[in-house]
Length: 164
Image (cartoon, rainbow, N blue to C red; front, side, top):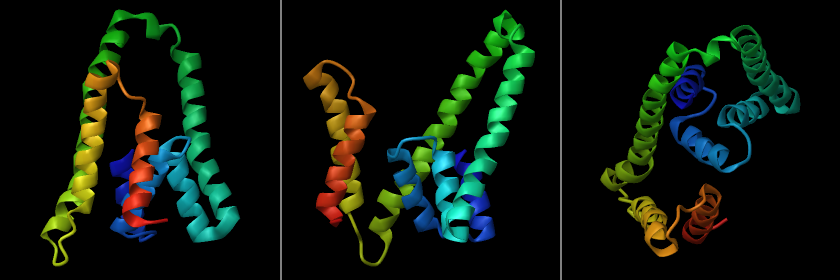
């Protein structure tokens, strides 16, 4: 959804690239689906509380109705091997989209600032520290780190590095 959101938001000029990247980061760390969080934020920025309510409703209702309709109509088909195979085939596609979006955001937020006039290495250093904490926790704790713990650590490092 992030590439679609990015295209629409930039096309209509609702926010610039930097604001969108920041909002995606905030939406990822706050509870709820990113699309709903972004829609609520953009709706609020463009139309206040009524805009936030309308944007949230406009994003949630169609998806809810479509999923409800699919579940009612296709419940029988979800048990067929061909449908299961299609769903298994979609998993790598979704993983690829998520990785591509993550690579784009890392490039934009961490790598690109190193080549600008004021050369800011701090985002890259923070990303490296978070990667080290995440992958190092597997060795130290002998289990995967919870994404929630990583988000809290990220927020703490961001506050320490950039202030409130």
